[in-house]
Image (cartoon, rainbow, N blue to C red):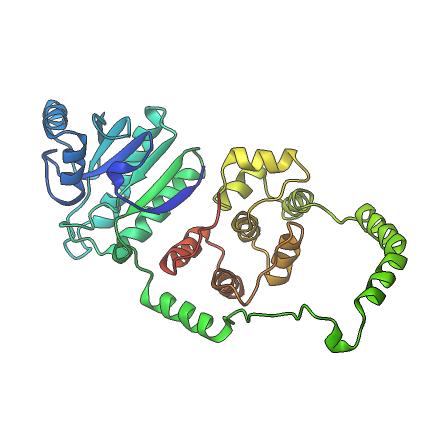
Length: 331
């Protein structure tokens, strides 16, 4: 299952488990930790945590969710930022890994993470984000679950300034506002009588019917057929493809079984990214689903930017799309 980015309150996520950015004593703190204790029920969660005792940095423990929608709360103390020379990155990675292992152990199908250690622990948000995305996406290559990375506000989720500037410049250069096109409803401006036009249409009706029937018979590959052919041509497996596309296994199965299945545009583009198609190949795949990349769509221009740069990391692309308030790739 995919990794999704959500702007929400982690305590309100409708998932099997949420992750608490805890302290080593498993006491109620501020920020995300304090919000989770209050939402779950301070007394109930405090009692459960006291029974466990403590948890080392980079490790993880689990309790019931009590009054929140999630069944479980996974508690993991992330590292305090000390400049980056005290194994902070390795410890933060371990926090995500051990939390994901508990998700798997308790047969959870979905989990929501905050950006661990980025609050009072001071971990730089951009670096913490990269570790979170890298660790989670690597884990998802070998496990099926839906993972949400939850940010409370947009300032918590920042692209590198260099990438943000590059995308902004590309949008400014290539994005074209779609012009409003108006059509006259009067034909007499051309000196053409309406009844003459109708007569011509009736005379050509049989010819049109024949042409349409012929076109229907000569339909090209469906999206499903074209996608499966491209997967084979690239020498990729189905699992590798849908995981790199950030697409759910069940959706991919539906696409494979239904030759006439038409995906959403963001899903079709996700497969183009997974297959590392160039711009022409991407439009060819999209055309099979009735889509194309357009310079009048900011979403499309951002996708075009990454394709032209030869950057096919779907999570990096989704970070950019999120930063520019666009739909995310995958399903």
